[in-house]
Image (cartoon, rainbow, N blue to C red; front, side):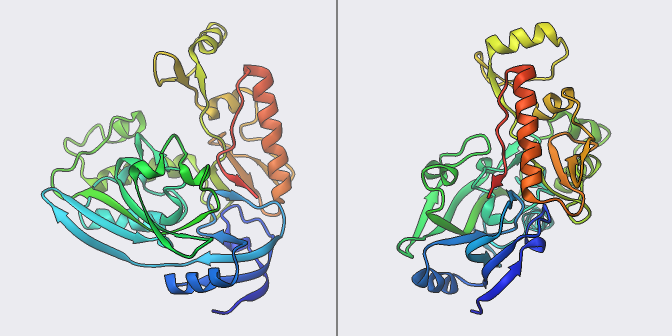
Length: 333
């Protein structure tokens, strides 16, 4: 293992923020990871860099997890258990599963990031979440270097949430994730409006049809991080109580919403931001994407602090207008 000095992290985060790592090491195996943890506990773990906003240089040792490999463990009836190492690119893994005719992840196509970070925020899109196909994961305890196995209940999955964002935050490093996928009788989910519309002329859509539809929808709305720095959805869709919703509905009869329960309603954060006139607005080197108000962008030379200040301005404006607090989805570091 070669520990490098003063390395720019610009190419390691999808926002393209140019901050430096005082020290940097790439890890390609679990034994290497354990070796580093035997020397240092206070580290900064870096995966695909897709769900973070870096606001300053990193003083800790930056450990770039680059574990690779996909293994088909076993099959049972119509199911197959597939394990992917943490450093595998998420979208590439989804496409590989589809190529093998393994179903369950097709709705999650084109989500940026790596497999290892996918359970941390229970990534989801178009009616599907990680928890729907999750079987287990393996992780290394940073304090002891020991391996632990977490099943679905252990992870305490919620909306863009898990135990790894709360009580176990910063205590474990996920090394691989196992999914229980379908191999024959696929139970596809095309109920989400946009997918349903794209696939309306296909009688029995395949896994690839669904994936292609998702990719087309995402590409039409979301900017490519390779072309313009961003981290996808910057804010969570807020869930409000029914009383507040009824008040807002009187003032905004066409307010889009999704019923969570008899007491809770989910409101699209993008709609709230758009109503506050932020969509498509540029503020120096940062701004709000012209096609999707949920996405904050770096036009080339924005600092993490500038993007964070814009996020706080959006939060304050939405709170004043709708009495709804917006929660940031990405990790601000």
